[in-house]
Image (tube, rainbow, N blue to C red; front, side, top):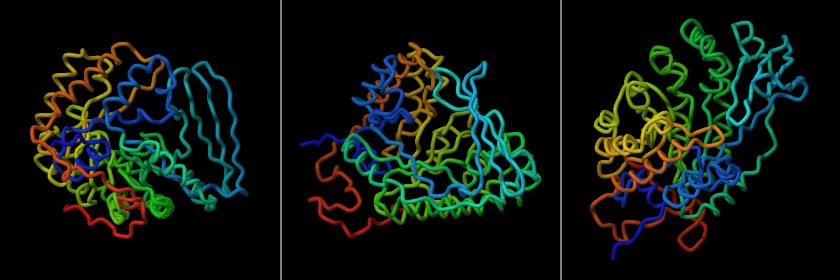
Length: 407
């Protein structure tokens, strides 16, 4: 008798390029089982949130705790004021060599934060930043992850989430200042990346040692993509560090590295693949990206699970018929025999949720359910639930590690 797959089985099956019943569907940041998400608290999102829980496959994004903070002897001041556009926060770090200042803005009914003044502006600021002393924090509450995982159950898989050192460093600057520094002072930026990478690796390893597993989302790669900077910047500031992160994740059971990178892939794709990721997303279609899902499936689809490529701007502006047609095209390009997860490239941040966006999300989910089905029948022996780390089928301690998937 055929056996229906759970979301957990379906997602792990896609990552492992195994036979599954249909293409998994992920609504990205909109995690249906996260009670703290605004989409699960705002009335205008209620119908969509219910559909997400009922019909999609949850990848529960969960931040990996960063283990370092600025030493208490360094004074950090925060001032908040109400401005015309929203709430502005000014942060001043009094480094041993002088002050550094940044400003952020939060606008009403928009769930995101804009940086309107970045911490670093020039090479002198870099030297000030390098004088900051960092100390390791006390052990975070890693057990909360496991409580989340138990609540999630068969509805999905954990998605631990962290920025790499490249992301930490590049985001200290405005994008204009970052690109100039990347072109002219790659060596100076590399000093910052090397220092931060050691902290990132400690944070990642501590979570893995605490039993965290699932699909680890690593973000930062897009800072090294064309047309902003040449591939040499990616190779200098990202490649060796990202490769080390991917190797560490893969050395633990049921743990898969997922590279998050918007924009163009073609020039950096060989370097991305040299890092040995398990998944790549959000695979934006041209003109925002420079490779279609068909291009990616043909070049790397046997080695990497592709995740994408429904752009949020289409969900916000198109018609349901256009959304359905785009889903059908995506399935024709990337569905294959397995190794594809339907994913939005971003999630809405505004309240209330626009009616058109809601209608298009409904169309997107239903179209993926229709066009994402695989014809073959799956039987019980081919659809076992991947075991959580530290448990056997009966809940006993598991000591064997899984072998790495072929790359």
